[in-house]
Length: 448
Image (cartoon, rainbow, N blue to C red; front, side, top):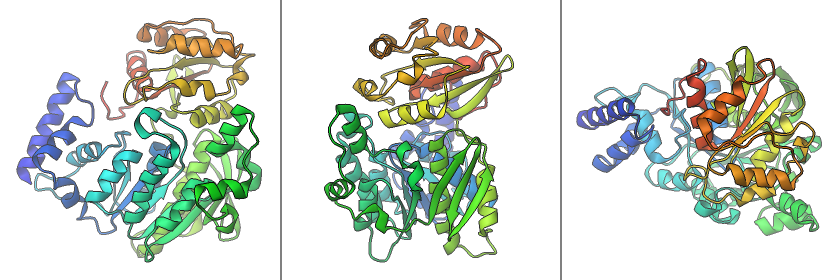
């Protein structure tokens, strides 16, 4: 174990010094020289592993769960960078274990890519799983969404304690049928008045194509699940307001202020609450606080994950970084952040981490940007994005494929005006790096 940790840390140090390899390279090396390192290290945890996966919201929800469990009294290990392959988890472990391999934590909260979650559960069976949603995303990697649901089904099958499912997503709710008989199932859900914010992939596709929307019963039959309304949600998001929300738990509404941005992050908070309640049911009260007031207070303290509604000040004006990587995520971001009174930039890359297939941009409704327009478009696929906006009759002030120049010009223009930057994953990382030369940017742990 000593040699494994020492080698991994040396690789990490070299990667940082040379600005190569990002956060995952040390993990890749360790997986090669010591394949049992991951399982052996995580087996030390007294309360096991929480696995968070799904198409949208993994990084933010993982941060929420980890932050809440920590605030409530547990020592938490997590992979905070968004490097959500198994090698990313190994890399994160290398920064936390002692040279003898001891991990000083009670529980792990890990974000896993849908495909890599399958590899992870072959090595480590999670005690808790939180499965968020299934939407079209990176079709070149995952294929159609039924295949993504199948991948998440392997996680449900491998979970030993509790699986928490999204009641409103029929493909996710259907995974209850995959859960072992001695593993508990819980749900998080939405009040009826909020469901229009979160159409299922089938409903969104029907809306875009002009086809009739599938009836609820028909859609659920196609997905292989019971009617979503038959499941009683452990936590329900009832109402959203400006930096405030109401959650229903055990028949009582709980109002709270929040530091999170966007209705989608508040639904992620409901998911995190449901998972934390599942953990609290198994952990002695002497180890963590579990009363409703403490849970709600913990939710109110969570801040956005990097690039997911993160606000960076530039010359006294807020620049909001908004990750977009599929039609649903982009749609929800546009619905959550009004463009009026703000400058807007869209940066689209098509590197491996973004997904090579950018055809999904044609499934996003950009009409909300028509009045205010878009100040800057950049990224590898800048002209594709500009063309898409042109078809939607959205005015574009400038297209600049020189990314560093584009970001610098955008954030320094109109210094008194708030700004929204919609970025794919690698564009978001590069934008943070550029902003780091202009203003103070917190270290996300992924390199520059």
